[in-house]
Length: 296
Ligand SMILES: NC(=O)c1ccc[n+]([C@@H]2O[C@H](COP(=O)([O-])OP(=O)(O)OC[C@H]3O[C@@H](n4cnc5c(N)ncnc54)[C@H](OP(=O)(O)O)[C@@H]3O)[C@@H](O)[C@H]2O)c1
Image 1: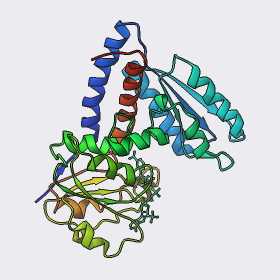
Image 2: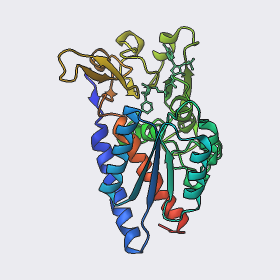
Image 3: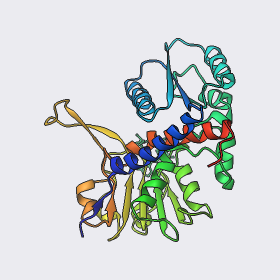
Image 4: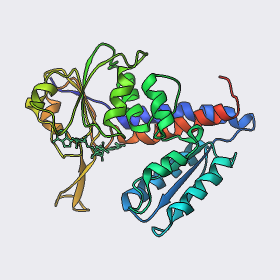
């Protein structure tokens, strides 16, 4: 068996086309969705993500503002800025790019964002709503994983999903989303982490395997069963002398080896990556609708 390669770029493109139509409907009614992205410091990967978020907004007709602050910004200065954007009706979504410099508490910053503008879905109010299955802003990468599964014809309902990784950003929320009693969920989920014993025995039971550990090529062919669906969230830069830059991106899965056994698999890059920003755009659109009492 050679797996179908799930094309995240194509899935993201079709969702973005849907968002664009919705944004233009809102604009005709005088509503312009707005997103502010705040970045503190010079982390190169964060700079790239922030630029891509701005470009996605421009492409979809969402008003965007990027606030670039020096690494020396104090916690109080950042909190005061968030307070201003919480009050500013022009912006439906506020995103503070992580990681933050060490002297600023991420927890305090995330708590300060109005949960109604928390389009990253990291505020404890939104996390709590996600857990109990009520309407909320879902975190973008885990929500993107769910959408990829559904739109590639791999509905997780009734399936055994094994998640590798238990971070608050990916592992825990993706498990939480997929166990909900809801359409596109209803999975039986096992979460594994660095203390899990007999990991390969666990992963071999997966109908759907979601890898989010940050370890290049960790999942080998003998760790999966025939016909598994593999979603590779990992993004790891490894050295590659044959590449122009001397490096390339790989996932947490040994793609070439696992592809031969899998029913479907996401590549890195071009799998989960494009979905994350797309779901951020969807959350921003949703926030604009909520703020303006828009009914579909
Ligand atoms: N595509 C995207 O948009 C996107 C978004 C976010 C993250 N990512 C990528 O996804 C990966 C995970 O990100 P993250 O933020 O969740 O990472 P993280 O916070 O470092 O968490 C990694 C998790 O993996 C577990 N783990 C590490 N090594 C393991 C091993 N050998 N066996 C079993 N479990 C192991 C850790 O277990 P412990 O808890 O026991 O330490 C932890 O729960 C990274 O490559 C990141 O770049 C991609």
